[in-house]
Amino acid sequence: MVQAGRQFEAYFVSYLLKVMRETVPEGTVTNKQGAYFYSFYDEEIGKRAAESGGIGIAKMVQEYAQQYFSSSPLEHSSSSE
Image (cartoon, rainbow, N blue to C red; front, side, top):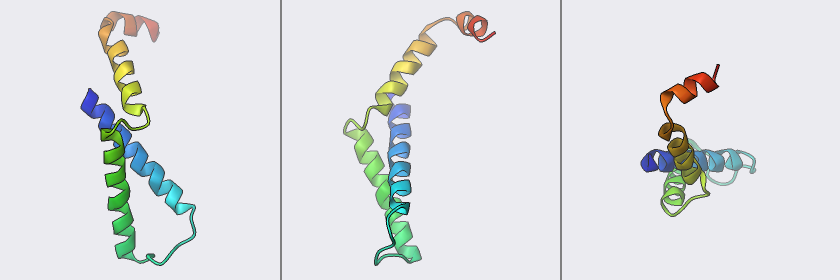
């Protein structure tokens, strides 16, 4: 579950960087190769951020999963009705 939380956080951070980059005027690297570079760069920054503690998303996912999966399945089915 820890690994899943880190992967989700890495994806979220890299997506956040991608979206933020789209708001900045284009610079000198606006060709297809530059787009690939920034794509890989954002992905790597996301991974590194998640591995070094991140922004807390992995911890929240882990806590939620522990809370959700530690209770019995009957509690979930009766609470959703």
